[in-house]
Image 1 (tube, one colour):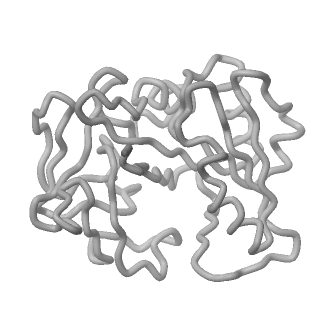
Image 2 (spheres, helix red, strand yellow; image 1 turned 60 degrees about the horizontal axis):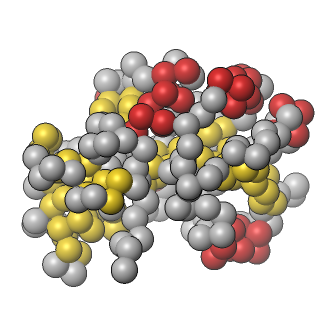
Image 3 (cartoon, helix red, strand yellow; image 1 turned 45 degrees about the horizontal axis):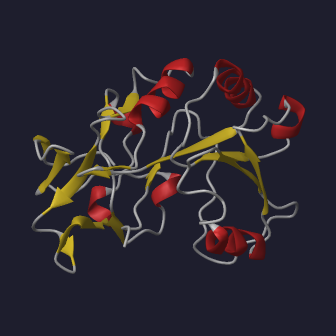
Length: 227
């Protein structure tokens, strides 16, 4: 059975606000969320059905587009508060990257999600996501480690859950003060690592006992690793 793995990358530089579903909170107009789908994408909106239903139940409006088929217009996309990009199945072409950039410049918010890589299971696509970060002018601040052929996974042999070194117990002490981390006491993390050149944008790290291992079994980082 495939391990259910994903990671949430919070880019504070381009996030004017963030939707945190921790209690049934409703806004007057509701938050509007757009998901990106693409061919070969494991975490499509179908696999996020439970999450999407929960969002709708607390007043959010959720929609999606398939980048492989067609792109939404800027007028349409700009009606949404948050654009969510799960682990992409395809690379971003120039038209889509320009659309995302224009959307952000108009005040939109972006939530990028990646995935881990281990053995021959190359779920994460660092090359695709880093190309987008480069286009948006953020790669000098943060990027995903590795490539589509050799990504990584953060592990911890001490702060682990249920004997699984790839599922890390991260308590609130590893979160920095931020709107995203308000109310969080503990999370279970299964994530690739991030290369962060600007420490001020780090929201959370793994414990000191953690390490990042690539698909070849090589450990390339140890300690408190941004995820």
